[in-house]
Structures are given as structure tokens and as C-alpha cells.
Image (tube, rainbow, N blue to C red; front, side):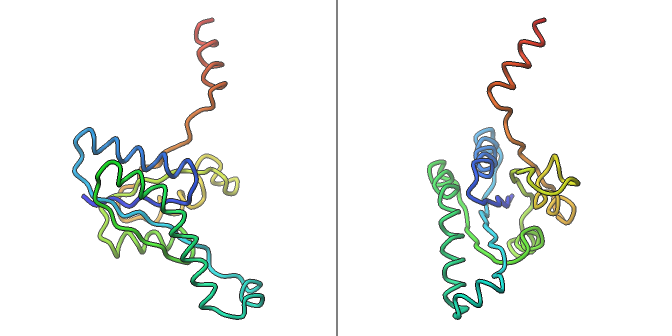
Length: 157
């Protein structure tokens, strides 16, 4: 099984990678594609930089940097993986990566920072969930420690 792990450098995206690693430690046989999608270049960036090649190099370097944490986790777990840095609309580009690499599933974090329609799930996560031809597992943020304490105090009352 080949699983896509989209990463954006956030702790939540790395938590999704850790979740995937836990699945393999419980017996799942899988290889992984870790991917980062850079937003398209803006008109302002093109006017300021004057050189599209420079912009592409900077964007690619940023993507590689954001993959480093996930690569380190997968290397420590001795798990086979490929890496991809792409540019474009994140949700659509991730669906393209799913198809291009022949992925069987996606495990990703949900940032929950999109518009109101995506209040519980991030807008990129929601876009991938809607358009993906394969199953998508969304790893939600862990509750804050004080929220856990409040829940345990309420349940003991």
C-alpha cells in the first residue's frame, strides 16, 4: 500500500506522519509519498523578482525544507518513502499527486484555519477529502492539556 502524507511544516502535519508510522508498527505494510505543495507565484513576486527561475528555485527550496521533519521521522522508523514538491492549488495538486504516484490512501492533518464552511476541517483537507479518488484519513489536533483537565474534572462531578 502506498500512502500520501501531505506536509506543510506544521506540528499537525508531522502528527499525521507519526500516526502513519504507528500504523506500520501495528502491522500495516506501506510505503509513503511525502508531499509539499507551494502556492503559485503571485504577480507581486514576479514583478519584484523579475526572474521566474529564481522564484521557482526559492519555492522548491522552501518545499524541501518543509519536508525535512517528515523525512527525518520516516528515516528514523526505517520506512520507505518518496518526496515530492509541487506548486499550485494545494487540494487539486495533492489529488494530482495521488494519481501520479498511484497512492492507495491519504493521511493528513486538518488545520481548521479555512473559511466558516471548513471550521472543523482545514480547507485543504476538506478539498482533498471531497476530490480524492482514494480514502482520506484526517488527523485532528489533540485537545489542549487544560481542555483535557476540564473534561476529566467535569466527568468526576
